[in-house]
Length: 327
Image (cartoon, rainbow, N blue to C red; front, side):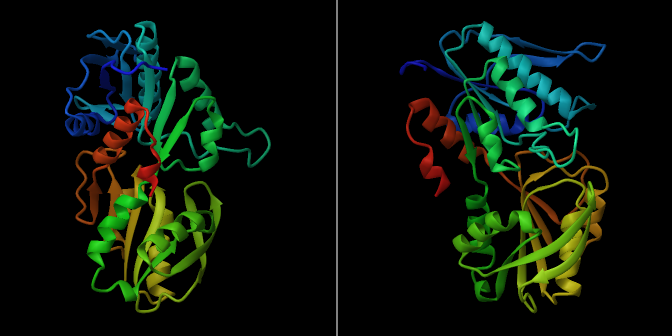
């Protein structure tokens, strides 16, 4: 455990440097000096250009695809950058290393759903731990049990308080005619807690998934007719499930309009086009994953999580409770 009085340092890879800079601005410290890239054959490398001996170090890196200097980087590049940076800091005698992973990738395979399936989330947790991380700070894990995959402390921040503040302002005059909707049965617990914070009723979209990245909406549990609807999910990948649910809420349920929010905007493949062409009026994301370059969609908006992560980092550094951030 790091001794009080040591300095705090924040470093970042290439997946979400803007968020790291915003966190440093909130903390009032400069971003750590390092270089992270890849050799001509694609191997990743990291060089730390300042001393970290005895420091309380935080590495900000979402495991998502990214673009650097016009060149695309994959989820695997982001993960390798994180592992290599942790190893470099460990070998440089950092006092404590916290992996700050706003978006934790490989979280969708958190259990075996059929024979010979991997449990990729556990594998990635092992890699981060073995690389030398002392603790993990993340947000809205796809499955809460992933916290138990780590043998080190994990703080899983919730993005819902940020959305609660936003929607309290947006629907303050029409809150009686607004409902929260869970896009599937698996997200009911998250949506119920969100609805309670907003003081709104809850409905559920019952769907049957036929294969990965596709779904078929079957039924709507609850009365959403002539209501303003807020669809809540933890992540949006190809956008199929979200857009199908929104369409069902309007065409089958009779909802007045549908706004969606999700912590992580993966937005792969046809996601942006689907959202653009959907009945959704607005889709809010947190910037745990940076906005894709060249996105032209007025419906998609982002809210910064820099303040919340800066608060959490301050609590970890001062060794005080992080619990107030979950209220």
